Amino acid sequence: MPKPEVVIRDKTFIVKITSNAIQSRISGLANEIETDYINKNPIIIGVLTGAAIFTCDVFRRLSMDCELTFIRVSSYSGTESTGKVTGVIGLKENIKNRHVLIFEDIVDSGETAVHLLKELQGHQPASLKLATALFKPAALKHRVEPDYVGFEVEPDFLVGYGLDYDGLGRNLNDIYVLKS
Ligand code: IMP
Ligand code: MG
Image 1 (spheres, rainbow, N blue to C red):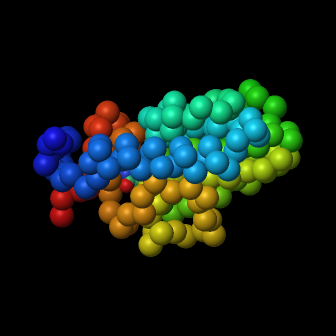
Image 2 (cartoon, helix red, strand yellow):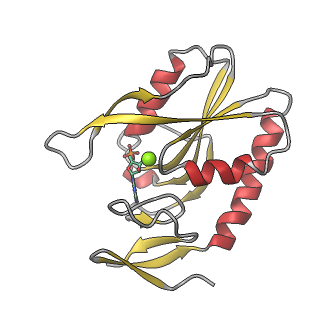
């Protein structure tokens, strides 16, 4: 059973999506992906750090041929609290003519996703799709539509299952929302 509440630094969070619910959705997503990519040997690209857990959870449920790698997005922080995305770091694989599936932890404003898709599209993959554990459609500021979504959520601040608050909370197995 998940803890109903957790305290991280100065904030209290309440449980929102249980580990059981997450794992059953992961299983469904893996089935969808397997159906869509069987015999295509896709390359799955997880975006560090937040998506590491989601990426591995789905990946280990796939029984077809598929490859796994990870990238980071670089950002500069200006006067705004959130850094603007400036590029992709760490892609060693040649993805030209490959079926590429990006794994994100969350699509919030869509800024990160838009930059990732644009940059990776420049490598001329055979196909390029986006999977995200969480999607906040009401927070979108860019035109992006994830192809695989774990859960659609309200535009509230979440932690757990890879998502952090000031570096902490990624190791929570359940997803929590900031208590208002
Ligand atoms: P974007 O606004 O869609 O570009 O999201 C940028 C990044 O903000 C995500 O990849 C997350 O790392 C982070 N983020 C967005 N929403 C949340 C949240 O609710 N909790 C923790 N991190 C978040
Ligand atoms: Mg992220």
